[in-house]
Amino acid sequence: MAGNTIGKMFKVTTWGESHGTAVGVVIDGCPPRLSLNSQTIQTMLDRRRPGSSMASTQRREKDRAMILSGVFNGLTTGTPIMIMVENTDADSKAYEPHAAVFRPGHGDYTYQAKYGIRDWRGGGRASARETVGRVAAGAVAKTVLDRQNVRVAAYTIELGGIPATRRNLDVIEQNMFCCPDLDAAELMKKRVKEIKEQGDSIGGIVEILVSKVPKGLGEPVFDKLDAELAKALMSIGAVKGVEIGAGFRSSKLLGSENNDPITPQGFRTNNAGGILAGISNGEDIIMRVAVKPIPSIAIEQETVDHEGQARSISVKGRHDIAAIPRINIVCEAMVSIVLADHLLRQKAIQY
Image 1: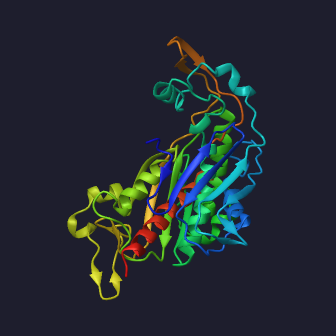
Image 2: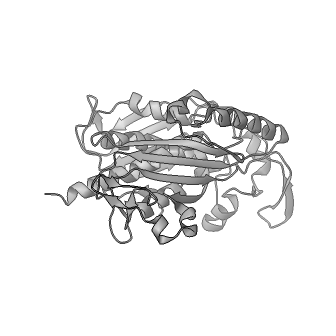
Image 3: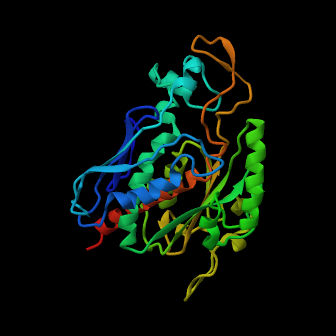
């Protein structure tokens, strides 16, 4: 009912608010005897930690993962895994002047409409801080995928209107934007600096590549693999669009161009993005997400308060200039969670 859980066999429930005591996740359905420790989770959390790039907020959170249940002697037990991360650097003072004012682009207005109450400190439950739990769960999901050698990677192919023209995945970790094109990464750096000086924000595009995907993952009709992946990615706050394979470009192609010919050696092309009829075909799964600009900006904007009175607002405080690159690992996590769930669902029907 409340929409805080995803998955059927590998169930993930996140909890906590941006400026609350802690954030975290409960994972139910993880198979037993998988190797898992706090460092496995920490490695992924470090990739989304605040202050990781010049485009990121300067909120300094160590994001130390604490496994509270479901692991014994470094192995999963098959019981629910609970992971908690304390909020140690929350500062609500910058939000106090706007406690009764709706910030444009945020969930303030809609949370108030739905619940009649909202946690105005840092966006509360609607904050990107909620994704800590997703990333921790993604680390657990990846331990499931590792058994099948499935690999998930997310990287920036556009930021602030600057596209990557190359796909050299070997250089992703060599630049702060996780871009597969080092020349484009340098231009992105200049663009972010320019936008930061203006007090504005920018969006971009993240591509997610899944390799060594088993054939047969996905369920007809409403639990199609591409539908579940799209839902998972769209559930990330800053994501406003998802495409798989050729995506929107397929609308411009002829059937003879869009179809992927099948040969004895496999598929000749991959316009389908690794999924046919909602079921994986063994090819790489390729997805892209459109990431909107961060709504918290210093530029004056029109809005209203709780009484419906016209107000203006300039949002101060510690905010990202772009959700990229911190959102990249969140995309990886959500894709991993869905794939782990469908991998376990597929095993459930195999004798």
